Image (cartoon, rainbow, N blue to C red; front, side):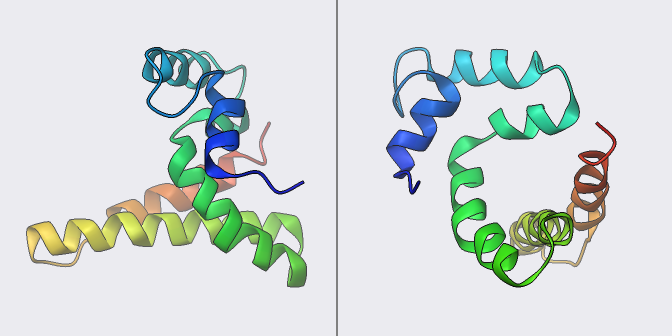
Amino acid sequence: MNLTLTQYVKKRNGVAIGGPKSLRNNLYRSLGAKNFSTFWNYWNPIFGYYLGKFIFKPLKRILPVSISLIFTFIFCGLIHDAVTIIVRGRISLFFYNLVYVYGACCFVN
């Protein structure tokens, strides 16, 4: 099933994008998650939607799901580091390494 961004966010938050309880629901669901992989299902649904649609799903067609997930987390870290590099003006791979570890932690649950 292909969800639109609006449908995806409503599924994750229980309310539409920009709804009055959107942030509250997002924090409650993600920070109250029973495990690490469930946390990632709720955390930042807008960014997660695009990572899933344009990175994870295409990778999943040619690679095993576990490898696709790791590469998706690595890509996420690289995007965060690119923003950091633009703002700070120097290379830092902090998020790349951190998010890679986060991806690996999803397999522990």
